[in-house]
Length: 168
Image (cartoon, rainbow, N blue to C red; front, side, top):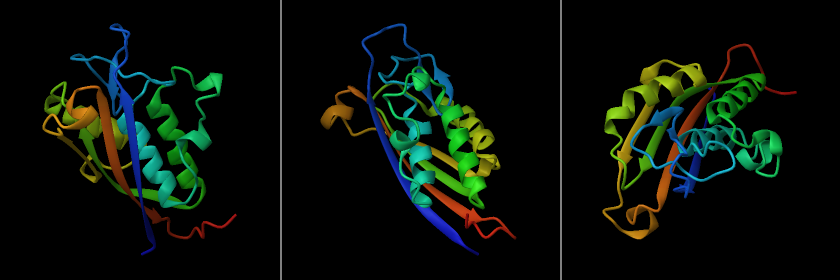
């Protein structure tokens, strides 16, 4: 079986705007605060997209949806991730599985794990058991430990589709 592995990292600071929603893996977390960013600042979706792009050496989120592009302002990051997934499929690959670690001192996120896994699985077109979402803190060390923002690391495996050579 042909497979490739990629990893992705995204970090966003908390926004100054108290009305900005916190969106992680496409799920609005009511305990906010929201993250600052050009799109909806969904660090989980961004890290997963970069992991998929990395697996196939297709650049990164910035090359696909640059922050200088007005059409991506406020964009739903699961929509961006779906575009990346379509690009993976177009090249003859499919998502095998994804593993994400979210680093956040606040808010508490464990209660949101299942909706996050479900939203990612739907977007990635995989079963929910192919999506892992874990949470940790830095025990108050560094910028993340001072609760200045949230980071996400993702690893993705892509598998070549049967009967498609992936060459264009």
